Amino acid sequence: MFHMQNDPFKIMFSACLKKAGIILFFLFLPASPAFMQTTEVHPYKEKQEAMVRNQIVARGIKAKAVIEAMRKVPRHLFVPYNTRSFAYNDQPLPIGHDQTISQPYIVAYMTEALGAKAGDKVLEIGTGSGYQAAILAEMGIDVYTIEIIPELAETAKRNLKRSGYGHVNTRCGDGYAGWPEEAPFDAIIITAAPETIPLALVEQLKTGGIMILPVGPRDSTQSLKKVVKKSKGIRQATLLPVRFVPMIRSYN
Ligand code: SAH
Image (tube, rainbow, N blue to C red; front, top):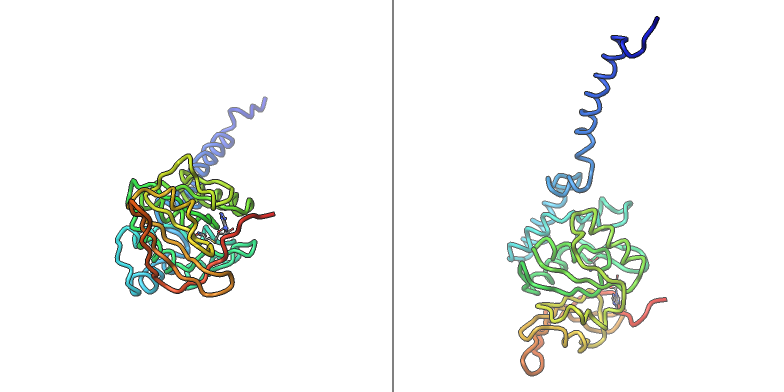
């Protein structure tokens, strides 16, 4: 009688399948985003290195932790799929809902100006794609970020998770209210432009804490400002002329 179980060909075939399975496992492992994150190997690595060299270091960004974070965070995982090849270009990019991910240099400049270090607690208003939050998280900062557009808040959460920054604290809501339960913060970064400095957010800063934000009218040049909270009042300085999307009061 013919026994399938003992068929030498079948035994050999199944042994081969097992081996092939193991080989396939290792072949496919590098395609998983988590693995890409730890090895830092991805198809845009050269573009990313050139971005750091030509847009960040050459233009005067000095903070080592910021440069390292820009070198590490996979920016192409924070832009729409069809624009990935432009992710490391010297420009902002659309992320849907009339919003944009900031130009790499502006992200680096604002992060350096914020002066936050590993272990600090930082609030971001305007999560957008999640990229700025990922840069801060890569620096070992404890990040809280608020986005007013629900679809963007969801996408950002996904982007952060798949690139290894799932521990960033995200919230969908109005950034003008801040995150009072988690206040005070060592620093606050706002990546949409209010018309005046939001005092409710200054309230949520520690004394000596720094807030970096664009201030000015919508659809016009605004000023990037650095606000330092003093024991009585604030001190402010203007850093750069910039153009950001407006910080809105509500979204329907
Ligand atoms: N930091 C982002 C870019 C932000 S674009 C990044 O790295 O990709 C500005 C974002 O601020 C937009 O997503 C916009 O929806 C959001 N925004 C505007 N007004 C807001 C508000 N009142 N509260 C929270 N988010 C707001």
